[in-house]
Amino acid sequence: MAKLRTRQAISNAIRDEMVRDPRVVLLGEDVGDAAGVFKTSEGLLEEFGPSRVRDTPISEMGFLGAAVGAAATGLRPIVEIMFVEFLGVALDQLITEAAKLHYLSGGGYKVPLVIRASSGAGLGFGAQHSQTFENWMFGAPGLKLAVVSGPQTAYGLLRAAVADDNPVVLLEPRILYAEREEVETGDNAVIPLGTARRLAEGDDLTIVALGSMVKVAMAAAKVADWRADVIDLQTLIPWDSQTVLDSVRMTGRLVTVEEGPATGGWGAVVAARVATDAFAELKDPVTRITCPDVPVPFAEDLERRFLPGPDYVISQVSELLETGRSPQPWWEREGLA
Image 1 (tube, rainbow, N blue to C red):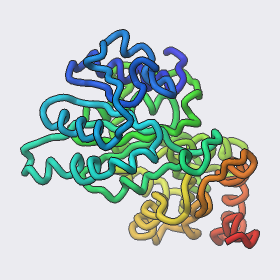
Image 2: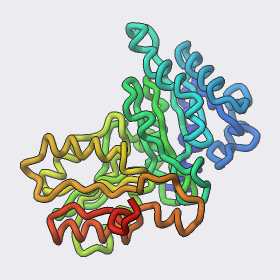
Image 3: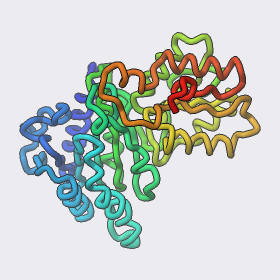
Image 4: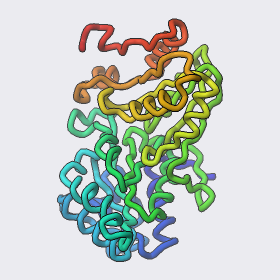
């Protein structure tokens, strides 16, 4: 296996799908001549040419709308959205058109479309370019939604997304683009959408994480006194409730680690399902470790404080295990909320 950075794993996945299927095309701002602002499409223009790797105007509504039409009429477009926030101007095309066309046409049309977007904090991009916004898509029937947690999942989830006949949003935490690991490629490395993966085994609690927080959860679990079943959710729509429930029924505790505000976070849905279907097996309250309900700070020290880190995860989980009560988040404890 080759050692690849996350951004390289993404370009490799796109290349493999473009080789496999001549209907796959790539659209987006600077995806061609510049090889992507985060270098996630290096070499693709040279190999496949401008008819399949197309630079677009700065108009997300326009080129996403074009991609929806292209998908409905036979192509399999991959659209790059430079920052997930820029998807806001094109949500009508994504949620009202792409996600609903198969339903509205009585199954007459399929929309095999992938929307990739960089997301998340940690690199000093400020309040308008550091959000995750899973909740924009989480309540949109007709979409699938997955989140990258490293090079291997970037490759495997992207290949699965391109092969899917439904519109799929793939969020790529940009803080992970430079992360490097050995990556298996090829058809055996495809990660089916809707499946979670267990990264560590333990019987004290279940930790469910997503995206960049998977690395945080694993770093905490490796040095803590407690032993956790750590699960990378990988896909949010549909999410693998069975894997989570099986783990919680074994450990009796659930902690979610989320990069995003507490209000409206994906962990609330996971917590509700566990509280409904595994209440009798719970030993302690479900605990969500999240960011505060404030914009992402620009200053480096404040941004670092904003994001959950391994030490904070350890302290929250340790308090839960010691007291049997869900601990207050740091901003409430310090009287900041």
